[in-house]
Length: 353
Image (tube, rainbow, N blue to C red; front, side, top):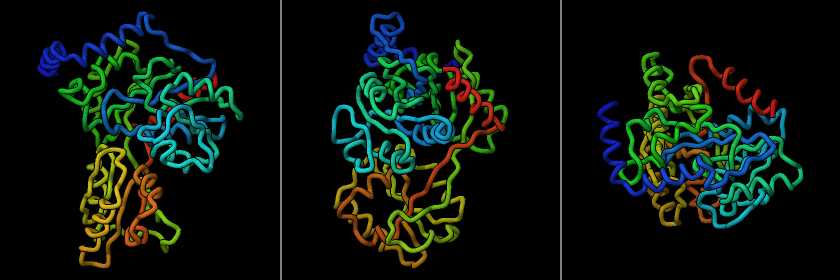
């Protein structure tokens, strides 16, 4: 790790992007740039890495934890949407209006408040003026958006792409240097194996330790039963054991999902697109063609719930896809039986505030 730190320090010294983000953070730290606080519990779920660390599943975990007791709102930037400004989602909201991840959340949790605004301070102000008024706000992917000051910052770090082995853009995938971990009140190492050893966990704790003494949790992804994406499909998905699966993804890191399907006995062929990818008609026709090439009747298409939000919005989805595609739900679980400790930490913060 020392050698890696030396290399990172050298690269940071010649990296303009590092100095821009460093100067911006110092300006917020010293009050030159102002952060706005709000008299309502606000929880930021984010990362300092480009790409998937599991923000949406962890946001959904917090929704499930809090929704029975409080009026919950999720505020997102709405990445990839074709709109601007503040939009509060209703039952008629489309993926194009609010983005794929907010659309997924609103579809799964229609009773909660979901809104998008590229300016988080303005978004929070609009939520507090609205009705019903939220009792807790989850700020999705707002770790670098420091104009709005959250009450708790949850930093997610993908175990498979640790920040201590990474570098600031453009030399690596970090949005800011590792010093960003100092703002975290809770750190979660995500996408861990259930076989993770105590030695591996201790190594991670040492690598991400910050001056706040933020507790470090370890989470893993639990995969549910694939379910049909369209009402025209009949019954549940067949057993994955021996099944030929065309895995269609537009997410940052599909390999763990592919590994899980193979672990369940599926023969997986991956068609991978960029994160938040909007599938064109030609691309969907290619998917249909690749699926039809499989010379077996024991075959299905599987996609993620995030991709499902974009696929269901397609008006020209080939019938062979609609008849054979299933979405695979993902849930978060915690290692070391520390789920109750994490839950209590969040619940205590919301209750006291």
